[in-house]
Length: 237
Image (cartoon, rainbow, N blue to C red):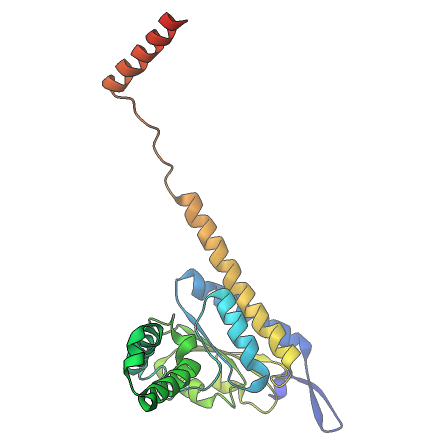
C-alpha cells in the first residue's frame, strides 16, 4: 500500500486522496461497461459498518448483494446456491399458505428457524441468476473468501482497501477508509450511481431505437363506411 500513502503521522497512515479519486473514477468507468454489456455486479460487505449501506445501494441499482455472511461456494459452487434459493422460495410459499398449520408446533418452529437463517444469508442473491462479471468488495481482508473465489473463476474484483490490505489481490483497488461508515457510504453510493445511470441511459436508448407504430391503413371497406357516414351527416344537416 506504500504507493497509496501520502504521509504517516503518530503511527497513523494518511491515504493520498488523489489515488482514491483515480481509483474511484476507474471503477465507475468499468462498472458502467459491465452494466452496458448486460452483466451482473455483486456487492459484498458483511462488516457492521458496511452491511446496511451495501444492502440499500445494491437494491437501489438492482444488483445482488451479500451483507450478512459469505457462504463458501457462493461463486465456485453456484449451482448449489441456486438450489438453496429454490428451497427458500418453497418455505416462503409454505408460510404464506394455510398448509403450515397442518404441521406440529415443533415442526413449524423448525421451518421458521430454517427460513430466517436462509433469508438472512440468501435474500440478496435472488436476482443473481448467473455468475457476476464483477464483485465489489468492502475490505478484502475480511472478505478474503469472496476474493479467493472470484480470483479462482477469473471474476474481476473492485475493492475499497485500507492500509492493512494487499492491493495486489484486487483488480481495481480504491484506497480509502473501509472502517468508517461515512467513507463506505460515499464510495458505495458512487458505485450504485454509476450502475443506475448506465441502466437509465440504456433504457432511454432502447426506447428511442424502438420502431414507431405504423399508421393505420384504411381499407376500401373502411373508406366506403367513412363516406357513407359523411353523406348521412350531410343529409341530416
